[in-house]
Length: 99
Image (cartoon, rainbow, N blue to C red; front, side):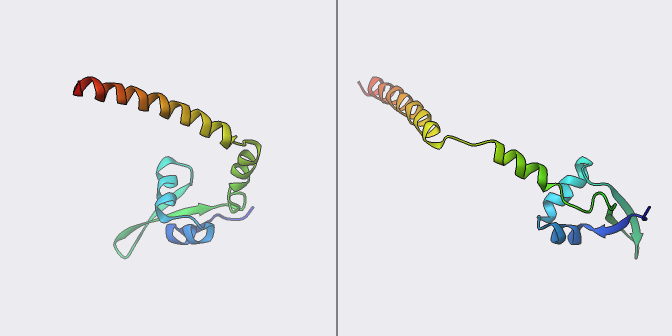
């Protein structure tokens, strides 16, 4: 069994092509295991990289997006109907206030 590798937040973000903010959110939510060490009088947060966690978990997201397809034409038609209903209600209110 290999010892865990420590990697900085900035290096993790660059390695996985995500923003530093996203990495910080993942560490705060507990998605990524972290270790805080003191260096030069400052606390520095490192992400613990195990061999099993070295691969990003994007495989789950890609399969989920492939299974879920959106019928854009139907969605557009539904939104357009709702827009027209709201438009007529709005016009009635404006007419009532003016008249």
